[in-house]
View 1 (spheres, helix red, strand yellow):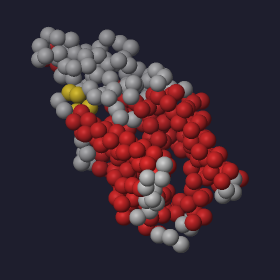
View 2 (view 1 turned 45 degrees about the vertical axis):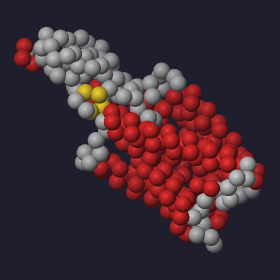
View 3 (view 1 turned 90 degrees about the horizontal axis):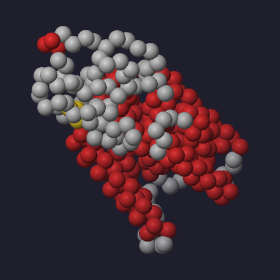
View 4 (view 1 turned 180 degrees about the vertical axis):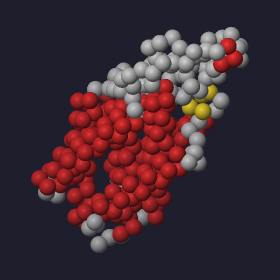
Length: 290
């Protein structure tokens, strides 16, 4: 099973007893003499996939500890860096770019650059910190301008959206840690199908609105329908977060190289940006027209 997050698309899941794993191979068909699938990040012949059945009956040796592997501290520190760059870019854009059509054009340009950088990184086999930091910087400029525009019309909306993003993300992490949400192959397939369908429908909606086929934004209007679509979008963002959490957990468990923590930070940042933008729209809808 492959992760839905494009950052992790080259580092897929595989299913073993209904659970997702990090770049693992199927377990050998019950043969007690078959070799267990190996950890792709191991540098010794005894390191094995912890999800695979171990041949402990014959006293198979355990893998010795090795260094230069990803830890939770690495993930937290890299995520703090990327989110810090996003916040700094947003603050500078808010302070230096007044609300205007020019600023809006710059925001769209920054979003396109961020998208290109994200796609380049997604198709690379290894993380490139410069691309990830560049994505965070341009994404921050986009968020800063958009947030200022929302704040101009709906005072305090960005602050409320930040609080909402923190609350939703914290609740998602809590549900994941409590195992209320189990990331399995079936879960990912269903969730990814819904996410792809959502994106395609939103693209069609955008084209219809652009050519005058729908008033007020169509499905993305600032009304009850737009609110319902926004709630669905936030739920999809939470789905992405659960896949990120599982991928990070598996990477740490299986001894992924430390550089993978940059990809973990990248994936988390994209998911949080998704949730923030949708939360910003919901706050604006709830406040109504001023």
